[in-house]
Length: 322
Image 1: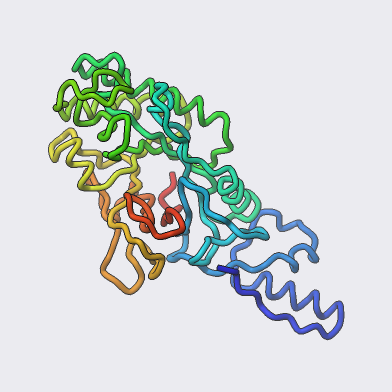
Image 2 (image 1 turned 90 degrees about the horizontal axis):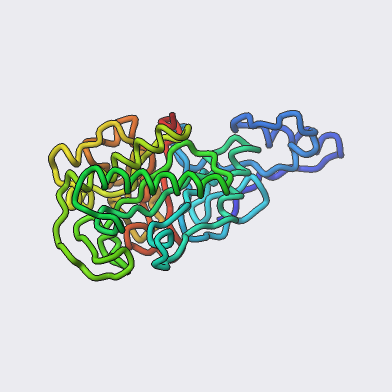
C-alpha cells in the first residue's frame, strides 16, 4: 500500500517550502537526524499512523516481502511505518549437515534497520534460531546434563551467526515448534532419531524434563555470553505438547513471540493485541498472558502454516523491549 501524501499548494518557492515543512513535521514523532536541511525534511514523505497504541508496530518475518520506497519505509499491504523484520539466523538441521533452508531477507532487514536507525521507527532487525530438541542431538543419552549441553551448543552457534549480521533487537528467540518437515517432523522434541539427519525414529518418547533442559541450556548460554535476552517463539498448543502443563512448561519470566491465533487475512489488522473490531486476540503460553511484560510479538497473519498470499505479518510491542 502506498503511503498517503499531503497536498501542498505552491504559491511561491518560499511559501512552498514553509508549507512542506509544516506538513512534514505535523502530527509525527521527532526522528533522529533532525539536523538535516529543511529542504530534505520537507521532501521526506510523512508516515501513516499505523499500529496503535503508541509503541506498537507492524512488521514482517522470515521470507522476503517487497518493501516499497522511498524511506521511511511502509508496512506492505496494510500501511503504517515498517516496524521491524525478524529473520531466521540459523537452523539446527543446516548446522548438522542435514540440508534445509535459511529463511532470511537481507532487503527486509536493511529496510527495517533504516527505519529504526535513521527515522526512529520500529525495532530494526531481530532474529530467531530454528531449535532442535534433544532427539536430534548426535550425543543424545537421555540425561538432562547432555540436553543442557545440546542447548548451549545451539546458543553458541546462534551468537556466531548473529555476529555476521546487523542485529538491533535485543531478544533472540528460540523457535520451538513441531514443523512437520524433514529430517525430523517434530524437530526432535518428542522422539529420538537414530541420527540427526536420518529421519528414522529410535524412541518415540522424551521426558518433558529433558526437553526443558535443552531450553535451559540455550537460555543460560545466551545470558552468560552476550548482552542479548533469550526469548521463545511458539504457540500454546504446541508448547504443551512438548513441555506438558507442569513445571517443565512454566516460563513466566521469558520473553515470548506467539503465532496463535493466526489468520489468512490481512484485514482487520491488530490494535493492541486484538484484531481491530473483533474479539480475536493474541494468546501466549507457558504462564505468560498478553498483559505481561514478557508478551513481545504476535505473528497474526501468514504464520503457523497459514498462508495469506503475501508473507508473515507481525505485531510488535516495543514498549516491552528491555
